[in-house]
Length: 348
Image (cartoon, rainbow, N blue to C red; front, side, top):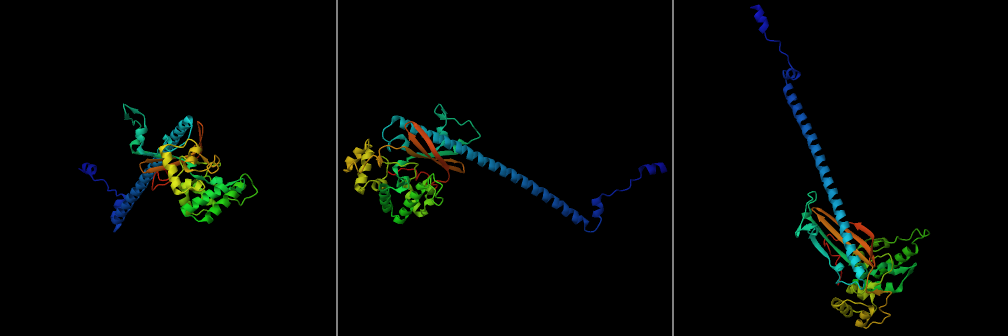
C-alpha cells in the first residue's frame, strides 16, 4: 500500500516565472501589457519592412519607365534624322508642304511596332505599350530671326539690329530690352575664346537661356516663338517664316504684302529668291542671299512620350548638310506641358 501510494503520489507543482508573477497583485495586467507591446513592435517592424519593399519597387518602376522613355525618344530622334536625310537627298527648297513639316499628333506607341497580318504585336509583357503615347514635331529654326546675327566679331550688325527692332515693335516689347540684348551679344562674342574679359556674359546655347543676357521672363516669353539661337549666322527661310518674322526681316514689308507672300507659298513654294522679290516688287538688294534663303540647314526636333503617369519631353537641334544630319545638342525637361505641340507648330 505504501509502495503504491508512493508510486502514484502527485509530483511537486513547478511554477513558471509568469505563473509566479501572476500570483502577485497587479502582475497579470503587467504581463498583458508586455504582450501587447511586443505585438505592437512586431507589427511596426513588419509594416516598415513592407513599406521599404513597396518603395523600392516603385523607385525601380519609375526608373525603368524613365530609361525606356529615353530610349524610345532616342529612336524618335533617329527617325526624324532619317526624314531630314531623305529630304536632303532630294535637295531643293525646304517648305511647309514637305513630310518633315507634318507634326506627329499623340498616337499609341504600339501602332509603330512591327505588325504581322496588319495587327500590332506586343509580345514583351515587361512594357505595357498600350499605355504609351508618342508625339512630336520637326520645326525649321531658320523660319525665325537668329539672335547670333546681332553681332559678329564683337561688332553689332546693322541689318540684324533693324530686323530685331521691327520685331520688338510688332510684339510691343520695350526697346531698352533690345539694347541690352545687342550689347550683351556683342560682349559675349568679343569675349568668345578669350580669357581677358571674365565679366562678359556667356553665349547662351538656347533661347530659354537668354535670361543670361538680361532679358526679363516676360520679354522672353513673348519673344521665344519668333527667335532662335544658332551656332552661326543664318538667313531667314522665306518658305517657312511666319508673317511676324517676314515683316520684321524684310525692309518696308507691310502686313498685306506679308500675307501675300504666305498665300503664294501655300499654293506653290518659292524655288528662288527672285520669285519672292518679284511677287512683292522688292529689289534684289532688299531680298538678298545673305539675309534670306529658300532652304534651311537647322531644325529643332521635339518629342514627347507619355507612359502611364510618366511624361518625358526631349528636344534636339540638328544640322542638315546634304544627306548628313548631325545632332548638335539634346535636352530633356518639361516643355509646353499646357499645350503639347503649341511651340512646335510652325506659324504659317
